[in-house]
Length: 248
Image 1 (cartoon, rainbow, N blue to C red):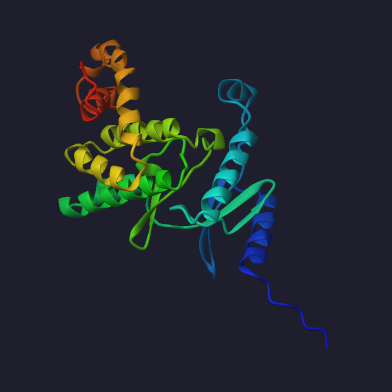
Image 2 (image 1 turned 120 degrees about the vertical axis):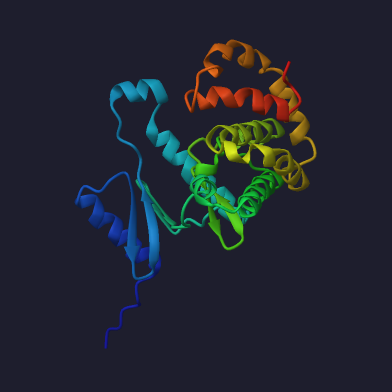
């Protein structure tokens, strides 16, 4: 008798990706299977104007694929790539992102713990010698007790340096301060947690970087004075500079 080996999860997902592609699926979609919930991500197919402004999306796709290969190989805090092809990546669902959880969690103590876990994971990523490229709470999800990092479209092996890690830290703190302002009082502790897990020079390099960005605070002062939630990114600038001891 001719017995066929059962399909692996990867085989089943590849077949699903092909089916969904023929059906004109979205570039990023969430799919539910009997093996669990997964996310399929494909390269963008933007207009020529978008390409001129942001570059070839295939490059971003390949950077992300390389990032997952590098981080998975080092058992870094990132989801494991379940399946892949020249025009798709499949990742397991890890639930709501950190920004959503910080916004909906009513318990301040739990919010603080979530932020510390995120700082610890970013520090661990840096401790393994990697730099994310553009870390943000919206690109972090949770597996067990660990925060995992997502979205490696800005990953570049050339940036796996102290300078790249310092830039990561400043960008992450900025995104927390801008998009999760209720967490600003917890950021000094988060910086300490990051430092406990990251290479010793990252914090100092981040402070050096912020000293070079002081001009941005003065240039955006009129915008920072807008009322309400307007221009929240600009209003986060002095917060970040204060945290790194660089505001003048």
